Length: 273
DNA sequence: ACGAGCGCCTGTCGGC
DNA sequence: TGCCGACAGGCGCTCG
Image 1 (tube, rainbow, N blue to C red):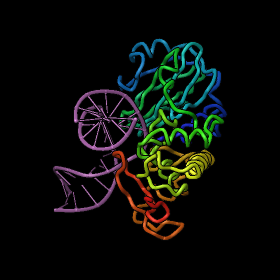
Image 2: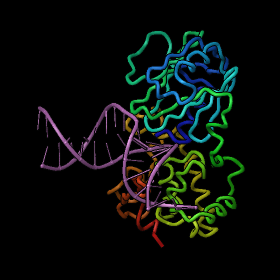
Image 3: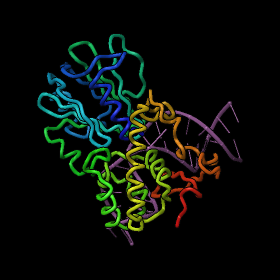
């Protein structure tokens, strides 16, 4: 579930601190425990536990949906996939179910990785490009321009929705924000990418950025308690609203399957030309 | 180049 | 009530 805005929210909270905990910058790792071996993608879980001990957090960042913690020697990378969640805890151990990894710091705090579906992954590597190097541009960066988007859309023939979900094309969009961006741009999810006009591409560019920025401003989207503390679920116009009236025209929102993913759209606002 | 199908996993929900 | 299939925020793989 966590898409770019949710991961950005984690990065900001870890970097700046919250009312519940201070910034993680400078914290020194005392030990780590892995409870599900396959949650660690690299190296193997035993080497992960050994290598991470003694390293301290020097920087906290995000690339696409990946959370990157620069440590003394390695980079610790998280991808939360469908159901991953991160907690900062101190003192008594709360009984959190589905804990896959626990990282304990010298100052008594702990970072808990919870993930009921076990799809999330951790990496500990000196070469973060081996994990995030193939990602497309950051949609909120200066490299992501209307001209770039139009050129790249027209260079492919794929359906626009699966293309936007492809992390090698653009980094960070997931199912929720893609549906919302296409709706805001008034583009049908089954359009072929090479049929978008320059004007439509620019509208889509603006929609992607504005939806992501609104998501970040709301601290992300919380659905089914998979991700906590966000407010953007109250601003969704199509995702999860099939059968409900479109807030623009009143037509009932439809749900179809595109590229194996549930896809929500307004058939009137987003005509298939 | 592209899409479909499937595997990875667990929890929830609706239908019968 | 209980069982069973469908489905869910993601993504990597194989196969046409």
